Image (cartoon, rainbow, N blue to C red; front, side, top):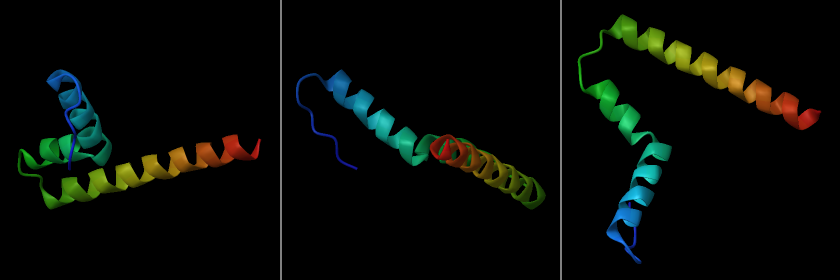
Length: 65
């Protein structure tokens, strides 16, 4: 990932952090910090999928209205 420093370094760092957060890097680091049992991993994946489906349904309903 590339971020150009135009102006202040703090601004470039802020942009980089936004891009990393959007790609889910911080979330992935948090998940991988500790061992996760396979059963817990499956449960988490199922919950994330359900959350994603609900969000998609809300978006679809909002667009059709």
